[in-house]
Image (cartoon, rainbow, N blue to C red):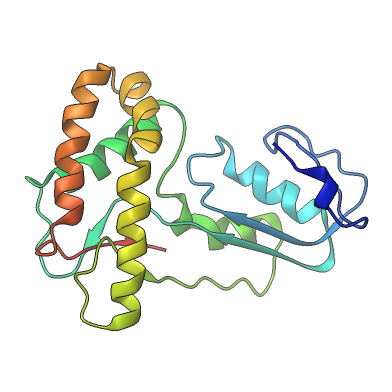
Length: 192
């Protein structure tokens, strides 16, 4: 829902399906997208349409975390529910024609669409407050809140439609995943 009485006169909202042909009335100087993993079935088309709808010299910026969950010190193991969840998510998305590890291909896809001077930067977002460094610890605190609070919302359709699980089965599994997400002895992070 948009609250239109507080919108400046030079702002206009448009609702569109970016998987369909883009029909915007003018080109953009800047396109910014965040956390669209799983959002498109045809990523090359998204990049091509972005390129075609940018003014010369325009920018496309994408920010997304990527699955699977990573770990550099072997504290995240296959028997952990967090590891299993991360891999089930990839499997379910693939069954449904979507990709949750697409950010690793953004640079290549952008270049194939015609973009030049493409930069890719990867950051590690801790799953919880396990890092010692204060900025990473704070990011981990926010990531933990975000992930545990949104876990059902990002998992349910993939697990029930993609993997064929029943809702009660998903609920029980996600409770175990949340426990792992809070476990500071698991030094997991999300590539961002």
